[in-house]
Amino acid sequence: MINRRHMILASGAMLVAAPATARQAGQPASAAQRWGLLIDTSKCGVECTVCVEACKAEMGLSGHDRPRTDAQYVRKVNVRDPATGAAHSVPVMCQHCAKPPCVDVCPTGASMKRADGIVLVDRHICIGCRYCMMACPYKARSFAHEDQSGQQPHLPRGKGTVEGCTLCVHRIDEGKPPACVEACAARARGAMLFGDLNDPKSEIAQKVAREATTRIRADLGLEPGVRYQGI
Amino acid sequence: MGALAVLITLLALPAFAADLPQWPKAKGEACIAANDVMRREHPDMLKHQRDDTLRLGIRGAKASLKACVECHAATSADGHAVPVDAPGQFCQSCHSYVAVKPDCFECHATTPKATVREASR
Image 1 (tube, chains in turn red, brown):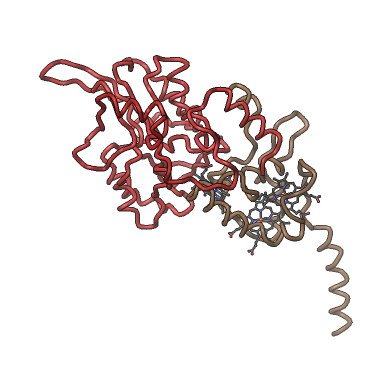
Image 2 (image 1 turned 90 degrees about the horizontal axis):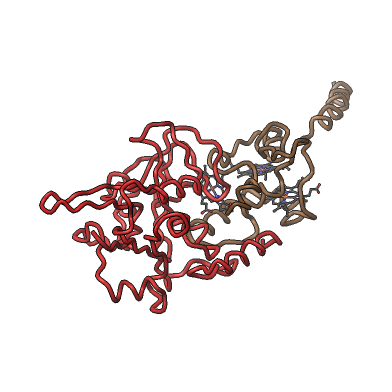
């Protein structure tokens, strides 16, 4: 149901020059789209955690001061090439693989890929076995170990289920970019570009067609929707 | 014996009526369907909708759990939203009466999004 508030929100979203327009109410996600990210790590500061903090606020992730098990949808991985000394600080989230191993191993069908390439956990049927966490080479998923409170209405989360970056599916469906992308553009150096890789007119599709980009562990052949430059 | 049964029924009836669940008024003009339909069909509506929304990506369809909470969460005297699963509130009062315990609100927010947060975005 579209009420007045939703209309106002939606029209506001258009003004912020969204990379996509909101899908019509009642329309399913379609394989005509393939949402992706292009991250230019040369713009990522070692100390910068703007994307990480924006994600936590957007998703209502509160921790228990246990960094090893607290839910984290995006983390900064600092790497250094011992041969050259070149160091990079890389934001790593769910890579939204075209061939996601987490989906292959899930015994219930909870780990799933939406038609537009977004990989999600259908927590309604997740039994918390965590096979997907083992299968993911990007260490992108977390497990909710405790009862949760203070959830955001757009991101239900609860004990005993696996969770991870949704590419801000709730925002994409409204025609808005993911929260990390928006925050990086507003408060950091705009290292992240979001858009539809299938749309030849989109900035991201043109950039990946023109410039050299890489995928982390491309050798695994999982065809992630997240690409990097500068590493 | 028959008279006793009638007497017990008569005694039980008012008690039964007095215990009917009560809840604060909902926001909005009307529900997404007629009251009698809602009472009977809402579990199916919600289960259908959750698969449509999560798995297929269909948004804005009528039986959204987020929307139930937006209309059915009461506002306390000091202006705070009251969780819909709190004792005496809409979903809880009826469910405790009919003895069902859906686990939806272990994950789903029980109040609408705070207006401050919305505005700051």
